[in-house]
Amino acid sequence: MFQIGFLEILIILILGLIIIGPKRLPVVVKTTLKFYKKIENKFNLFKKDIEADIGADEIKKDVFNELRMEELDRNKELDND
Picture (spheres, rainbow, N blue to C red):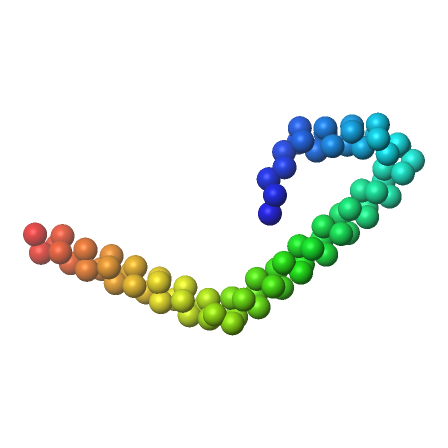
């Protein structure tokens, strides 16, 4: 979901040590990760519900089939030339 590199994580941990302190930092990190996972799970459920409501699987299949047909038509045109 988010693209966070090693340097960003290191900076966040150092700032956390300075601001929160070494005793409370593990508890804060665990709580933050639990909260993040809950939000991520809710977002994924919401996404799946929306995809099911609009019939995303059928749309994906239709688009794939349409692109495949166009590719086959182009290949036939090239073979005829």
